[in-house]
Structure formats: structure tokens, C-alpha cells
Image (cartoon, rainbow, N blue to C red; front, side, top):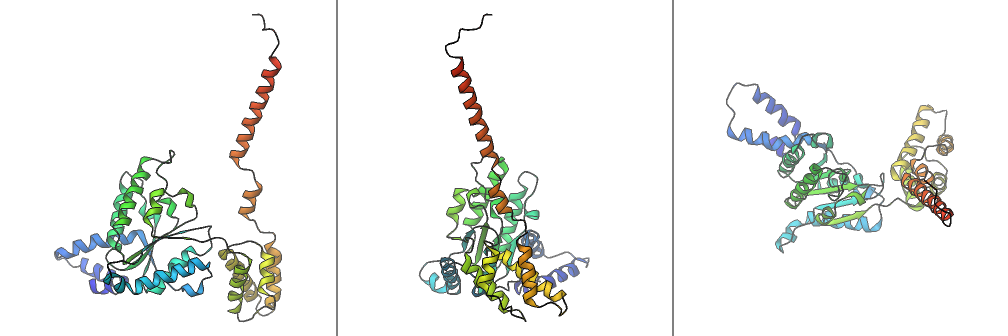
Length: 333
């Protein structure tokens, strides 16, 4: 079982374990310790990395830092010969759908390491101290082998401890998380991603050696993404990628990918009666009627602004009432 697990053959190792448990014998002492270390697998989802860093369209600073990170781990022996370790704690921030998860997958693919995605539904418990216990078991498990540990929506764990609306339990979780990050070996690459960097605790930022920003793509980057995606189709549309990007407007890579997939679905279901240009035009017409939550939030006034306006209006009205009462005799009782 240990040999199969070292080869990342977890399914075979689990079958061997079940077969061993069906035999009425006293397990050796090493079996119990192995179960303890393997218990952390319940809180992770192992993903086979297939996306490469070269396939991603990223800002130049992000690309260069990603290439440097991969080189540091591939040549870690050179760094250790000079008393240094490769960087292995990376924090990714930016709006959703712009490549943070793909970046973590690309790093795992470049280093030929398994990608472990943390499952918060299994990690976070409802009882006092339960989350810390599960987090300790998870960290003990990932230390047993080189891997890429990915925390998506990291603000669910690393919230600001000074927030008065949070309970004392989340503050203890953040403190314990910081301690676990400090004790993580360099062969475990920890990648955390968040869409709300302002919610993270200030001490969390210091724990990460590499902090990368994934902003929303501009028109040229969206056009490059559309061009690369449409070039892989069997039928290449005649429309220019720049013109399609102008019609789509501001959007993320995830939205651009959904649009391209919708075009391909419509053409495939046409069974040859619908050309790719026609499917593209239909989806472009439908794109204008989509519901964009970002635009709705921008058009809808914030509740805090409404409340502040109401308070200012009440203060103004009360001030007028007081100024109007000045000079009048007091009412007789």
C-alpha cells in the first residue's frame, strides 16, 4: 500500500486497504499510523493537472514570476547548496474568472506534481476546535509527499481577525492556519486564491512569499484568448477576433470561454445546417441581452449610500426646524 501510494496510485492503495481490513488479523503498528496520515485525504480533491502555463494568457509580471517559481523548484538542489529554499507560498488575488485556478494547475503540471484542492465543506466544522483539528490532519497528510496544495476562496479561512462581526472561533482558525503555513516544507507548494483581498488578515499577507495580481483582461488580451480558442475549432469563423472582442465588451476569460463553447454547441446541434458564422452571429445577438451582475451592482446605489443620504436629509431638516424656532417665545405650559 505504501509503495502504491508513493506512486500516486491512491485507488489501488485503497483497494488493498479494504482487502486487508476484511482479514481477521491484528494489524501491524504501521497500519494505524498510516490511517492517521491518510485521514487528511477527506478534506482534499485530487485533480490531474492538464493545463500548461504556456497556454494561459497572463500579464507579463505574472508570467515571469510563474516561470521563476517553476525554475526554483526544478533546480532546488542548486538553491539548497547555497543555503536557500525555493519559494513555495503564493497568494493570487483578483476578480473571478481570470486565471487564478488555471495558474495553480499550470504550476502543478510544470512541476509534475499532484494538485490537491481543499474542500471547505469537509474542512470547516461546526463545533469548537473541530476546524483546527481537521486542518492539522490535512497539513500532516500533504507533508508526506511533494504536491501543490490549492486554497480557492482563501478569504473563507484567512479573514481579518480584527473584524468585530466574526466570532472567536474564526480568529483561532486564522492563528492556527498561520502557524501551519510557517511549518509547511518547501516541497509542498501552497497556492491560495481570493477574489476579496481586502478581507484577508494582515498577517496572512506576510506569510506568502509571492503575491500576484490577476486583473481583468483588456480588449487585446480577450482578443488573443478568442483567437486561440477559435483557431482550435474544425471550422474557423471568418470574423476577426478583435471585432468579436469589441462586440462582447468587458468580460473575464471564463465568460469568454463560455461564449465560445456556446457557439460550438449551437453549431454542433445544427448537424451541418448551421455554419459557424451563423452560430457566432446568433450568440453575439443573444450576448447583448445577458444579465450582468457587475453592471447591475454599478447601477444600483449601495445600501450604505442610501442610509447616509437619509441621515444627512434628517439632519438638514432638523437644522431647519431648529433655526425656524429661534426667536420664538417658549410655549406656555
